[in-house]
Length: 206
Image (cartoon, rainbow, N blue to C red; front, side):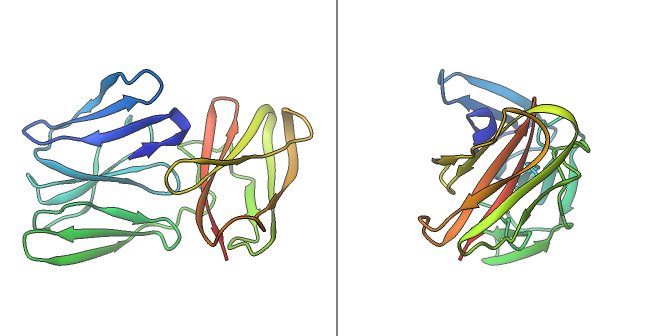
């Protein structure tokens, strides 16, 4: 699973106490992010707030970690049948779980993320409207204090599409126009950063 904010690929492993690992795409270094208490992890995906979802065959379940893997795992789906390559539809906020053991697919509606951030309240007053977008949209933000801001739009493969142009790199509030007329229809991701914190928002271009 590509993590664009940290320029790494996060992947899961088979076996007991299966580790979650990451490849640094700059140095190609492989590190262990977390050693789990689960066995035979198969799939990994992320929601729009950066939370990770991991499928495992040991408990026949899908578990959730926060973006930094600092929270305890919570079970979001159980009583599955060899859950395989899971996927989070960030537009509709639905987790799709293929059950390879009985050839079915389980769909789980996830809690509404709204303008949720990665575990803090810095982005409570950050919005993008309209979204879906046909021609123009605006990113509006009102941060708790003056912070160093930046924004990058990626496609679903993690390729950088464009960088946002802010009036000043250090701001507390403002707005930026998002022009998408040259983009193909589909889903993109805006990563908005304020100091060392980031918020990932799916953009739907119509």
